[in-house]
Structure formats: structure tokens, C-alpha cells
Length: 190
Image (cartoon, rainbow, N blue to C red; front, side, top):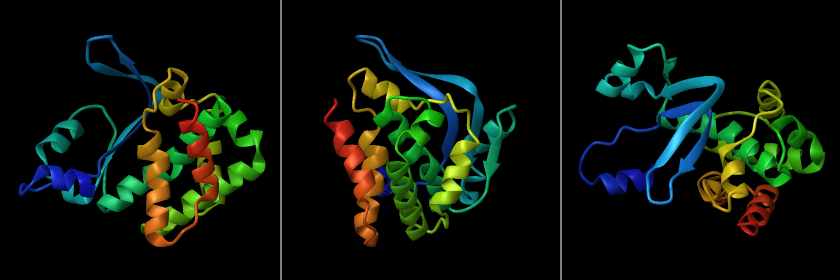
């Protein structure tokens, strides 16, 4: 968010919307990137301070589920706390979520606990066990867009997801050795 605010200059910046859904990114050789929604999960979350924005009001007038509430940090970290382990574990094991969660229990536990500790330091109280319960409630075959990007030879959101966890961990004095190891391993595969 700091980077977005710096880029916006003097104008007001209300951000923190998150999109929950399973998507893939497709790129033509010379064309734009197209995001395609797949699966049944689809929801937009925005912080309470964004409720009056025209774009939020427009989205709420559609059939799209739009949840308004919480602070910017709560909205962003409520998503990142489950997205990070989902993306990192499915990518490092090149498997669907269920298989990825079971492939290396020590790694899974370490990643979940570290992400939970960083999320808690950011103000979104959670535990590794709670994150595992959230992830096990998702389809076992679910894969991440990071996994698809890495398989296609692109770094994708590796730094924006795993790197963000690591950087915030450093900021708060929370060690993230499991997350860091997964990020290094995945970065080496691109």
C-alpha cells in the first residue's frame, strides 16, 4: 500500500480491495494480459472506508458478492493469510491444494505458522491451525495462479506474495525461514 500511495502522489488513495476467486492469466505474444475466472469462488472485499466510492456502489448493484467492512489492513491480510500458503504450497509441490497440504507436513506447518504470525503482527489475529482449517475447506484440487505462472516460466506474483510475507516478517521481527526457503526454491525454478 505504501508503494501505491507513493505512486498516487497528492491525491487520496483508498485501497485494500481484495478479490477472492480462482483465476488464470493469459498473455498473447503482443497483447494485453487477460484474467479468466474459473471455479465457483468469487467475491470482492473492500474496507469500510471505501463503501461510498462509485466503483464499490456499482459493484454492489450487480450479482457479484461484495463484502464491505474492516480496515484496509484487515481486508488485505485476511486474504493474504490464506492466499500465501495456498500459492506457495501448491507451487512448491506442483499439486492441487489437498495434495500440497499433505506432501510435507513439517513444511506445511512451518509455512502456516509463519504466515499466521506475520498476519497477527499486521493486526489480523490468526493461527496456523486456523489457516489450515480455511485451506482444507477449499476444493482439494484447487491450484493457484502463481503455480500456473511458474509452470509457464514466469515469476508471477512470487515476490508480491511470498516476498511480502518475508518483508513484513522482517519489519515485525517475525522469523520466516520456511516461507523464505520456499520462495528461494521457487525463484530458482524460473
